[in-house]
Amino acid sequence: MEDQQLTMPRIGDMAPDFVAMTTTGKMQFSEYIKGKWVILFSHPADFTPVCTTEMSGFALEQKFFDELDTKLVGLSIDSIHSHIAWVNNVKKNTGVLFEFPIIADIDMKVSKLYGMLQPGESETAAVRAVFFIDPSGKIRLIMYYPLNVGRNMEEIKRVLLALQAADKYKVAMPLNWKPGEKVIVPPPKTVEEMLEREASDYEMVDFYLAKKELV
Ligand code: BEZ
Image (tube, rainbow, N blue to C red; front, side):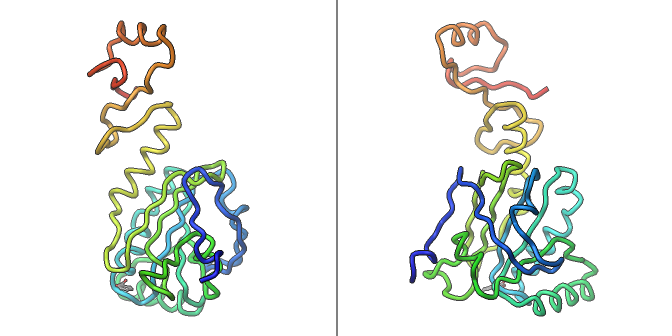
């Protein structure tokens, strides 16, 4: 395998730019994502069962993502004709329409750029990747699932809410955090901050582990 095929973007990297054909037209990724939260996700192949459940899951949550000002972009190593036929087939069979763009990555360019092609799993199909990209274009969270295990939509929604809340309130999220639960206040950086914290009403295990309600 060439080096490029082993590229793995990392958390904190700027999302690599590309031009691609999609089910909603030609896309310059940097333009599409400008100023928005974006979830870029790959699936191994059109007309396959697990992928159909996953893509339908994203489509059924379209309103949820719209309300969080978050754009969706799907991808697989299939042609635009295959994508369109699959979108049509799912719509006819289940009434669910995939409105978000799906990249036709037939030359594997984007899959390689984003480390979605993992040869130990498949030489020809993208793994189930999910990239969460913030409005500055930075990759903030990455998930990779194998071909035979579907992703968890509740977890995808949870981490998007967690990332957005962490940024907005400058806090961190503890194990299994869900919206409405207490969040972690970042540890104090000075003795003065530590003393202030001791006088606060935070739920505190010790000065470095303190939680508060989000108001
Ligand atoms: C599926 O989506 O069902 C699937 C796709 C590729 C390999 C295995 C399962």
